[in-house]
Length: 96
Image (spheres, rainbow, N blue to C red):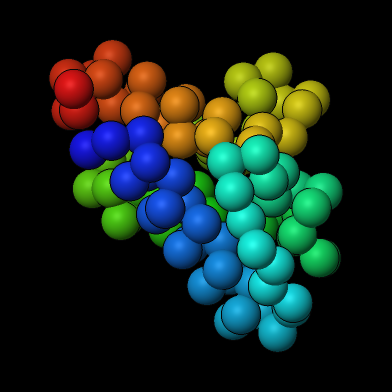
């Protein structure tokens, strides 16, 4: 699976969460930072998104929130989230 494919899955998940929550959806790209750029989206939504992304990618990430850096102090862009997901999957031998 390509990085662009993973990014699209992330965007789809984020749009779905925004829609279900009754919040505005905005155009997103690899430079969009879900926590901070999406109206009303917060770190709790990041946990929900992590579970949904995990389901769609078929891999159980051993992290609570893919949308923040490992140290937990910085929200990641969609591109960074996709890279993190891919790296974790590659490390586990799930994706190449």
